[in-house]
Length: 440
Image (tube, rainbow, N blue to C red; front, side, top):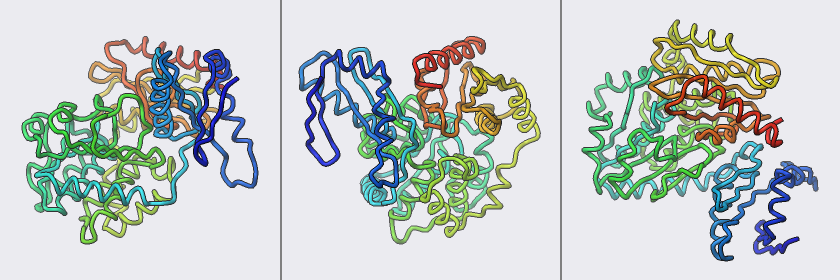
């Protein structure tokens, strides 16, 4: 009960009644799975992405909503339906890992654009997300090197030094070749940024998650580099946005950019170490979300001087961290037969959220666990780290709780709630999604 018009080789427009939309919604858009059964000699499964506008407005308004929805669906990796209606934005599907692109044309184009923006400004300030980790730190260091290659002043915003980046920071602070003020606090960054500053955001595209959201209002020249699937809450005024859900890490993306940035650019050994460490941590030692281009980026960094042994030594655990991780795994509860839920015990570890994410990874090694969730009470927030291998889209689960991430690696933050309430909300979310047929 609708009208379909093909207007490009792989693009169609569909107009249908709202009653028909409700019917396919109730079936969870079964066409997403049905189309994967198409076999005409293709090597990869066929997938379809849809953006639907249903705002009870004019055809023009609904078309614009549909256009925004399809951009969001593709930005999140495809194989899904995004509906924008008067109640908000709704997501269906997204159970397929984003396909790695073999072409590097996009990386080359983005590298040249980034070079032009850096050249046009007096200085560059780079920041990652709050509770900065090795991936955000390494990517920021890569941008620092790109700016220095063009003889621009460059700085990295560090809102909090966690145990996960302290070994890397020590290397830069002890090296004589780097300025003492290359690392800025939030307050220092706010005083420094102006209209002649390029702000580069790495490893997140959500303004509220950045290390210093105020910087986004102090300049009109913002660049975003991220490998997480997009949510609605994105930095909207970026002059350059490079978001690739297929990439293993922000460090992989920056390593590719550096290869096309300038012929004469030379990455120093500790900078290569920082980028390599970010890839290693985000891929869980090259076990998760690792593609051909991940290894190619790692090979480039090895040629640039990254030392695998040196990086491994930097990321050895404290005894207390190991004990807390073991206790977290041993206290896990199996919910609905396939979902491991655990609470990280309160302790004096420097980076409890990092320990929680590592514990969630460990829980995936248990037979029958489809997804794992580790909750941490830290700084008056409940952090939930969610992990999966390939059967569950944990990003969709975390989005229902206000978070996001990847298909198999996601998280969220709950403010002003108790741990018991957080566990209850998580279980109810799982129950609702199972009852709706979105989870099995």
